[in-house]
Image 1: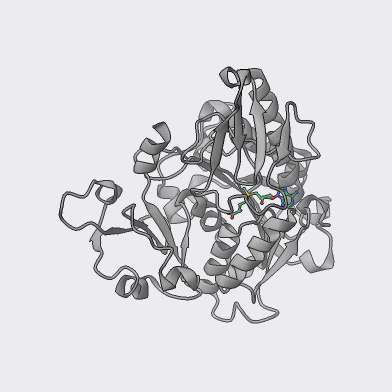
Image 2 (image 1 turned 135 degrees about the vertical axis):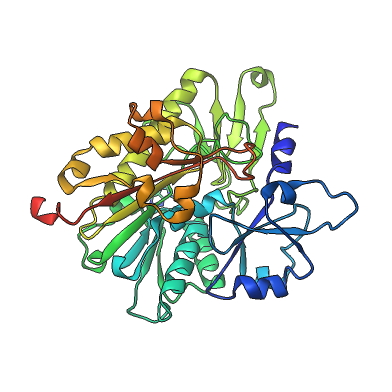
Length: 393
Ligand code: SAM
């Protein structure tokens, strides 16, 4: 019931893929006859015999619209041809916050499948640079460790029309990629959206569904149930599964299956804390790896978790790290963020940032069920000023 209630507070978010179409064209075709409204409450309001189909042009994220639930857009030509992409609003925050400009050079997406954020990055670059899709122009390197998920990524990149500019690192562990490699010399912006507990995903309890990376010293049992069976959900926005254990264990344990098909038994608060710590260790490691790219000037870090352990605590550890101190990485302040992110009202938790108000304000949060119509999410940006540079390495 809780999950059904949550879902009623979420519209269908649709990102208009500007590589293939425009908002105007979609309003005239796919969304012809929709009643244009100005608030999320109007989109979510139950229909009372009047117009059933309503559309809101999102005030924060460019080229994003919210649609009344219950309309099946998956059968439209626009969906089949990659002109529209289903993507929760909060999931659009990282690419928009990263804001890759032509002068930022090449872009990396370190944890890319199924490809929502990769294709969003491509759309942003495309909008800025008409020749973006030609060889030798600004490139996007999209790494994905899991081979099966890499296939989905490759497919999505193609459907979205981003394949000209995007190199898929198929089955490639981003932590094993050498930042000093010649092909990455011009990488100025990186997006890191690593595996997380998924506790912000709509339709789940706050008890997280965990993916413990193989290398992490995780407590408890975690295994991939679906590997090779092609059953895993490919989109964290809406396709999640959860089941209870049968038998006596049911009273104490929950089995959670995340969007990567990993099944985890959670026994207690202590067990949960140990798992969050294991995830945070992996998240910190992969983020520090991103900060080591020589030409990098901007990095975003995001999770669909509501837990501070995976969010503000990771940010604080990054800011205290050797690589951040040596290379001059700092938080991207709220005042430095793109307008829609600056205007977004829900910020990081100051008490989880050691009382540092500037860092907390720089962090962006969202919570499911808080009236904004989005999933639970976290994103922070890191920037590096030109003065502190490779000379110090
Ligand atoms: N950014 C994606 C999107 O918006 O569509 C969702 C990313 S999902 C939260 C995390 C992904 O990172 C998973 O597909 C997982 O297999 C991948 N991953 C985990 N560890 C990785 C690593 N070391 N290198 C590359 N990919 C990794």
